[in-house]
Length: 136
Image 1: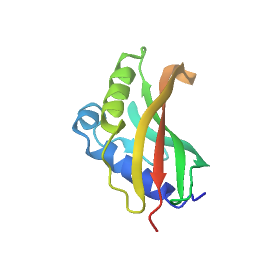
Image 2 (image 1 turned 120 degrees about the vertical axis):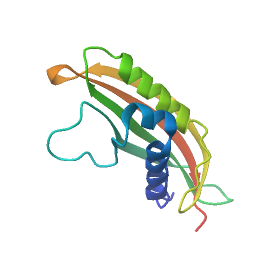
Image 3 (image 1 turned 90 degrees about the horizontal axis):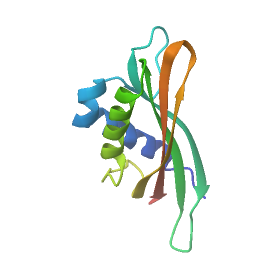
């Protein structure tokens, strides 16, 4: 197994979300790889945890990466969070993203979890699954 493509995948996902028109119109530039300290905006997107498992074979090294993209907002309901989640799915599912290392073979939606957090916050965690191959 190789975890060598993980940083390239994360960077590509971040860039895709930052540059996507549908996501930008809803959250502006509030897509975070690392959530800033201090007062957070009322609505933002954060890249979250990731798991990777080996997908290597005789032809080369590869991995399945399962990662989370979270939509977090201070709102009474889930409607806005679901609209942002839909835009994220539109941006990422089957995206043709170039990686700085390796190659993205597939990127698919796996599942989502919507929940109420403390102080009235709403959160939707979108779980995606990506298949990558290492070309180094």
